[in-house]
Image (cartoon, rainbow over all chains, first blue to last red; front, side, top):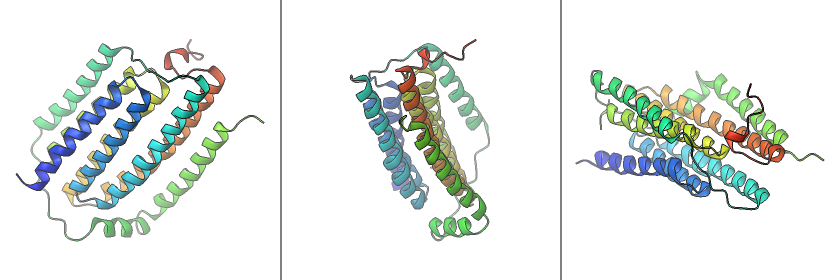
Length: 164
Length: 99
């Protein structure tokens, strides 16, 4: 068993377990913590795929940024309610049936298809290629992304401001 | 590991996120499910990128991550506003637009 196979199974178990925690735990705050674990495990999968730069982005933006914002939102609404938020689920059977159906559809497509080509050797660092592409053919989308982030954050500030 | 293993893992996470979106009643809980689904898509993008030896997939994953951050910021701001106005973020109680 090579290191990649072992790492894949470890990451897969952590990722699926944490995802189950996100959708099943009744305590909203615990769900966010499980989401953080799932996001870090996803970063681990990126590492297995030799995308070290995306691993860093995943940790900084997702596990750092998104989780912090969600925790802030929970604290804020919990403070306004004055009680700990316990969330319940509805339509459990319908949701489970639909989710399983989607998974079976995708899995059937994957298992039925012909096996993909083996992983080509990757010489050099993917970070270098990403950097070159960002200032080369993908420069315009990259700049537009900056505009989008500014607009979205200004919009979020505008929405969440207090009326005074 | 073959490409298929990564795609199957992503499919499991996507289905779990879908289940969360469909069954959660709390607005923040629904957002967490959406996060899981977007994460599964990112795994697919990076896996295809690696197995095709083309860096474009990783760039798409990068763009998706940034757009997700913007989406979460706006989504949570909307949830906070809804909470201020309606005093609840339970999706079942937000039926003003129901015909």
